[in-house]
Length: 337
Image (cartoon, rainbow, N blue to C red; front, top):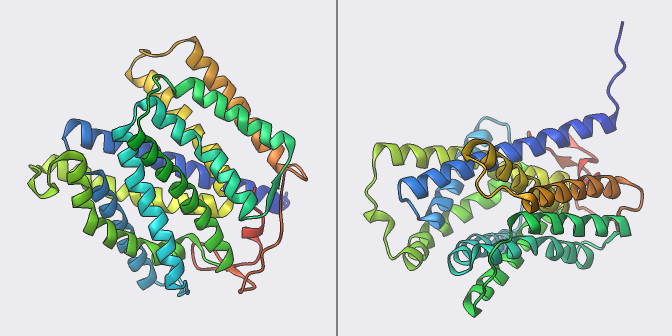
């Protein structure tokens, strides 16, 4: 018996789920490796490490281009520069915010990226959201806040660092979607344009930023075989993390990426309770998890309905886009959640 071919909607749903699963696995994996590297082996040079991540990602794109899996494409230098400025301010801002703020305020700052992303998509992307979509976002925010926010204290310099980090991160994620659509770029292509500049800038400035945060130079760190192994492992996983972020934002939107991103927060909390004991697990944490998950389910349902999200068509200079393997596709980028 011949099975009927899968519908376009089913194929898209399968690819969306695979992209999101890829992002979750690599994001959780790199958190675990970096935590071991920094907490156990004392390698606290986060900005320099991020530069190494992008250097490894650049090497991957060079190899894939040499093998013919990435087609040549064009992205104006001015666009690359703007993207890298947003991305680097995001990285440095998050590191500084984590150091200068309490855990509670740091989590509040991360939650605020959802309304900021919504603001950018409404005023820059000309999107409109239904009432149910807006309410579901509020429910997600409430649930995650109940789970993660504990102490709350803030100072002037900590607030400035968090403000810069939040807006830079939201702009960087919005720009990923914008550049992919405007210039018909696949995820690999966009990484190929931006990763080298990010790697160079972060490796140049990273040691000085890290010294200002830790009072130690990265060159003076006592490297060992094990710590080098974890650095290499972190860089390897970062290839998937960087790529999956671009794929997910390209397939969905910056706002959806932020909303679903909190599923990773819930997953990390749950895995921590399962594997590292139930200390900190109480009724309000469980309640927050349930509320957040219900909000995410509601958001997925509301945003997929007609009128859930509406976008004015933005003309593209190219009639077709390229997927991450360099093949042509005509409509994938117009089917965002």
